[in-house]
Length: 180
Image: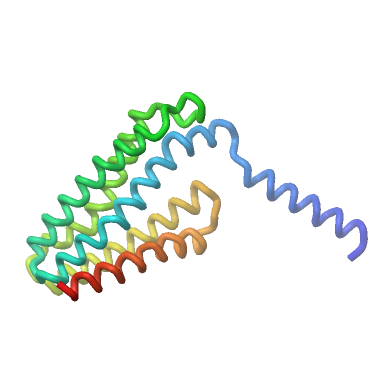
């Protein structure tokens, strides 16, 4: 490779790095809105899997699984809202209002937890489980897209990271549900 090609490659790499940086406005928006929402969505989607699927697999009763999922989604939402709101005043970090971040995180957690709970309104156990699994798969894709879009991480990497957490949780819940 000659000197001009090396210089062009270096300049292209520097431009790519510049493109990857966020403006101050984008950075503030990411810290105060997107990050709390994504934390909530991921936590709600992942942390509620084990209780919902463990109850569904152990009881084979979609009605009971629905209420277990709803209670878990609500409890997780309240917990995450308080955790985010109390974790940082926003004064030194520039992350914005703790009340607003807590509300965003709590709402995201509820939404993330309730979507794969809704299929358990179906009376048929097998249909409910199948619909819930499809819903979880859709949630993981959406989380991957959101993470890739706002944090410029690439969809495959984002999807793989979120899915790994989901696989671990599903394995634990399946084992617990089958053992009950």
